Length: 363
Image (tube, rainbow, N blue to C red; front, top):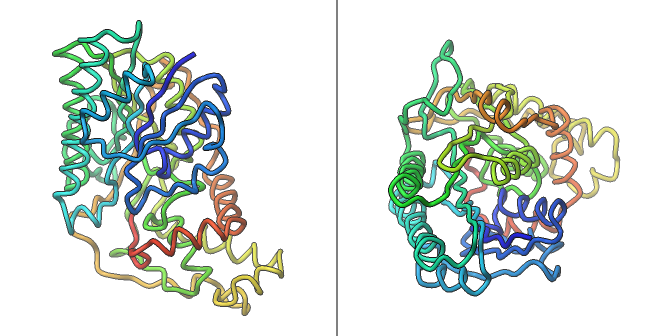
């Protein structure tokens, strides 16, 4: 039986990971630690917070003393670090918050973990896993091969730079102090409970509200899309079998342009309205409620500074070493995601009431 500390556990990937872990490892204890900033939403954990194995604590990952106290109190042996400022547009407008949380916060966690595990030796075994992003590798040209774990860092946004710095700190604590760490660099995630500043939930909810669908530049930026459930499965494998000190890339092996993705989302929304007449009454502002295609809401806006053109992940390492295989293709994953947002209006209304970024697209 393990005792996990999950930072950022009330966020998108974090809440899905906690839910996944409760289902797959019901005997393990989980301490969810989240600052509940704008993207941390406690209702995302509503179905697991009542479990005797799950404890929630609101707090800041920069508080090393508190992290250390909690690690001792709960005899934490596994730390899964998901807490981060993650929206590129916000990093361009206010980079300091990204340095504070993603760099200083990660270092505080490492210092607390080193003290608890290597100095005090509170538990017989330990693992510090840091969840990072493919954006640390920069941008690919049309003919460039996908990113591997050996690709040099070349971040192009303050967000990506802050995550690259965090990756290097985790590596340094492994090499210098012997902390047993692993890192995963993932591609763009999507799925249920995602905050609507990201492309897929933003466009779904904008369609339903009849709000323009803003597309950066020419819309031909290419991303590799990974369903969050597959990501959680990959994290499980890395925690169980990943070699300490190693990095593993995790992607969806599905590269599509933003325009292609948006077309798929719009087609799915139109289809749902055609198949379920009740949606017309629930979402009267949606063009599909009046027989018009939701793609009519699409509008092009000026590109953002330093917008990476293409991402792609080579998953040879995690496939060969850990046996990871994807289980959710983009078509079925998108269809399920659209259905989730249509069926969880209360969650959507609650998170939108807190949102100040409903006209921002990120991809």
